[in-house]
Image 1: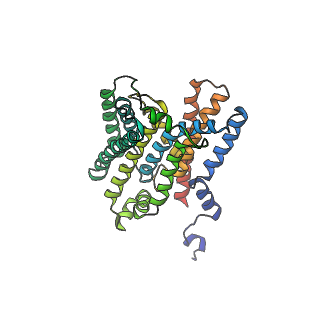
Image 2: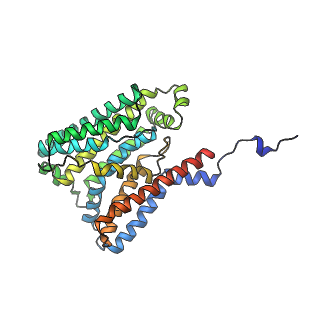
Image 3: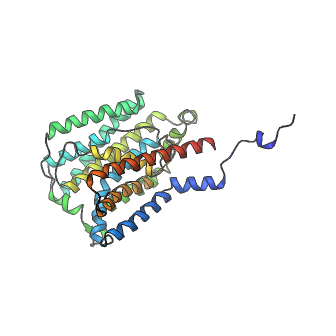
Length: 331
């Protein structure tokens, strides 16, 4: 009995399927979605293209974009990180209770936030990488500890963030370019460099197939530790930018960003199964979620329904991500 060629040769994805996959994971799909949503926003809000309106939108986007960017590193590595809410809360209350004014104070403040986030990320990396704990369990524990520390530092909303941080980091350079946008752009550019290094390549390799990556010489433990370390540093930077926006402290300020960060990651096309995705698309996903809030507000939709719409978007994004992963696995 003879075998047909189609029964012997392995299946390969079609050029159209490959093109669509690159279109999604490269951020093109979510970028088109964002531009379409912005067009709707422009109709509802005539001043949407004014420099101050763009700056305000970017200021609102920056904390979520940075938090989701850190989460993307962990998700690419086939992990989950719930500690971002606790890291952001700690950084926020620290800046609100120990304000350091002026450019020098702002530099010390951002370094302090990055160090706090990096330390907590390192703890996560040790628990997940060296001790082999499940990422959800380990990061849930660190999140609860961080939330407790934040409440010890500031048991109720209050305090104040240094004026230089509040006014300068939410301002515009030359009256046009939002400072917060430059911070996010710098992080994305840094990622574009890192992803081409051995560490960046290993990050994707572990997410795609951990065993194969280990057999090819990748130090899984160190790479996983590095992913959580960098993610924690980005959470700290997100807490710094959130403090600049709110100008005050709140021990639970990071909680609202937790689910939204996962939604931004999924919207950006990063597979929750690991091995694919990128920070640029995640940032656009975060911007889309923030813009959605603006559109709903401009349309006169009550704020009580905002969470419902965000939940629907999260479900659709996760379903889309899982569907793309299954299609990719079959191909």
